[in-house]
Image 1 (cartoon, rainbow over the protein chains, first blue to last red):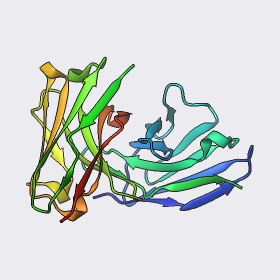
Image 2: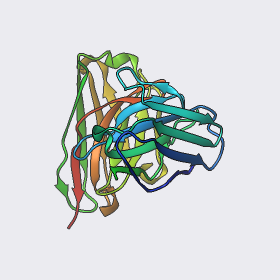
Image 3: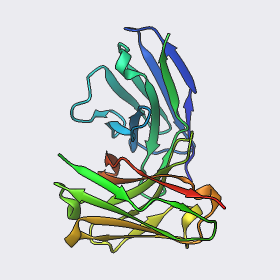
Length: 108
Length: 117
């Protein structure tokens, strides 16, 4: 199975500042990568798919980049409502799909 | 609005069985692959299984192969997960999700399965 590794595990950023989360896959997943946001007591919410396509309704401060084995989720200007855990997930042609371990984002 | 509602979670002893259900409303259920994803307490999500629109193709994560069976009834807009030979490590919230181009675009609120003696 493909292993997804996120860094860092925890990130504290001041309001209005940039937050950057990295995700690395153990083998190439091309552009088959999604990012999810999970707040306490809620299911994950799809933010980005195909590595860089923003889901409908997701604020444009969220952006994704990368391909192959290295990916990045950027929150350009952190808002209070962005406090959450963020997960990357690969979905190459053959299951199983796998998730990263998560990055917890908090306000500094 | 798309809605997915899971049910069937419970406390069960190791070695026991459980059947989870997911009811889809206002959703073109039959036109999409569907997945089950689970999340153990304090852990990240883990994809469990998925099923093609017509039910003809199914995939499972290795740890549940031979124990779990995914199925669907398009006439009832429903997804199921039959879980047999349950283990303590199967304890988790189980989510029903819709796949769109393989990303998981809609999630239910989840149902809790606890495997404990």
